[in-house]
Amino acid sequence: MGGIFGVVSTGNCNKTLFYGTDYHSHLGTENGGMAVLGANGFYKTVHSVSQAQFKSRFVDDYKKLEGYFGIGAIDDETPQPLIFRSKFGVYAVAVSGLIANKNKLVNELLNEGASFGEMGDGGVNNAEIVAGMINRGDNIVEGIASMRGAIEGSICALVLTTEGIYAARDKFGRFPLAIGKSKKTEDKSYVVATEASSFENLGYELMQFLGPGEIVLLTTEGVKSVKPAGSEKKICSFLWIYTGYPSSSYEGISVESTRERCGMYLAKRDNVEADFVSGVPDSGVGHAIGYSMESGIPYRRALVKYSPGYGRSYTPPTQEIRDLVATMKLCAVRDVIKGNRIIICDDSIVRGTQLKNLTIKKLWDNGAKEIHIRPACPPLMFPCVYASTTRTTRELAGRRAIRALEGKEIENPYEYLDTNSKKYAQMIDWIRRDLNVTSLKYMTIDDMIAAIGLPADQLCLHCWQGN
Image (cartoon, rainbow, N blue to C red; front, side, top):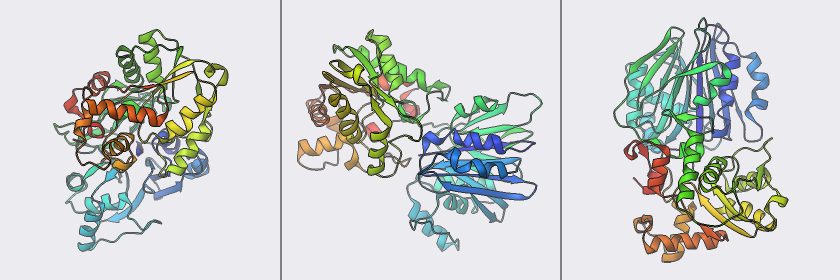
């Protein structure tokens, strides 16, 4: 996971860049960085944020930054932005997404005479690969376009040049890029970001979302489209269900309102009797509120998040760290829980380990009478091939259930995707027993699509359907 942010301004952009990048901290936990172009040329600062929040790691750095153009990144895979000297001159690159065929592209570039700086883990930085691919073109725009055609996976990129910032959304628009302009009419300042919700508090208003494959150039004179959007869109559905911040919107569709609609759809198909509804903080809260609104069952907070110092438990790269974060950040409210039948709404069940061992256990340990789990999307059955989230089928709760039921790993799980089939019911019951809950009922794929509000053919549904 990750997010990128850029700004062009006639004055020093350091404050906007610092806070704009920080507003992407919910998208990653490992690396952060900023690069600026000013009177003294290019300058960058990059740090690990795995043991500290972005603000605390960069608060001293940003005060020293001076530049009128700048880009920033939060990324779980590679430290960035990076600065390159090329045939196009000096430029800086920040990217978000996943390069699934990284080894193939690295070997191609090495054979062409490129060289790479080695990272601590021995790998090659995604920003270096993207820069190497861009340098193949006759100009930066052609280079970006050919780079996206060669990459398997999904990459959004910001390229900081002396002209301005080239912003490029990935080929099929799986992940968002939004453009904003200053609310002050006299201020010729523009921003670009993964999260449009970063604009409001910085004094910017949303102008547009880039289309799939679109490339624009941001300067203080405005925003110029240098490559039009493609016709095919496949935006990640998980943005609304889990990844996006509640105040965000994608393609003009609100994250929080979508989550409320998810909860309403869950309630419409449910008839369980309970004393109250609760959400797993933070991303499950909107779903639970929607469930409560539709069902009339009151909403209460059985679990609260201790926010300072604890980010998302889904994003860290190892299970050990994910478990630690989940253990420490969620606090049970015993007086609310004890003796009650509780409906728990969550965004999803990915691996199921945190929900089982940390969340559900806390509820039972604090005297819950019944626990009814209601995830706001169908069982995840296929690892994401467009972002660094789930990497193998063995991780997924649904696949573990299938292995247990079949006695082996099966290549084709499609019989288990039919919500009316016996195999689907067996899979859900296995997960329910493994989680140790009173009942378990998932959102259907049709209801999830309806809650988002885009046509199914404009959504990436790979995690659930495998295509």
